[in-house]
Length: 165
Image (cartoon, rainbow, N blue to C red; front, side):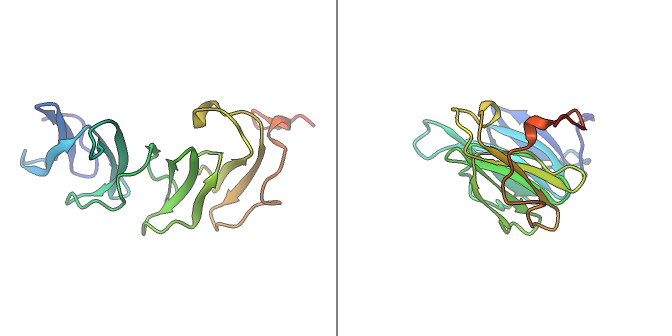
């Protein structure tokens, strides 16, 4: 049995597509995805081809294979602390576990929640979210309110957990 099980399901590749099996080796979610990630908090990230077959897009599925979001995102993250980061049209936002979007897709860069906080950026420039530079950074707390002013220019002073100001 593969060692890839998470929350009772395992993503496997067959004929170039990914799907999921259960521990009884039964196909639970058909082999239809370009990628299939581990389940976290009951949901998994997956990708599939766009209708014109020129690109791929990411979204979320549940354990029965129901698509919980449209497959329209350039990237998605696993749920951490009940929130998942998504990127669309070079902007990021966050889904909660009910697939509501309490933090709308409007930020130029962002990070996953960790210890109750998620860093977000407005004004960063660059072609990929991981390489964007500049802008102003701020934080959202898990209660979904800005921790300080909505966006603060302070990240350059806070390195490796120590204030450098």
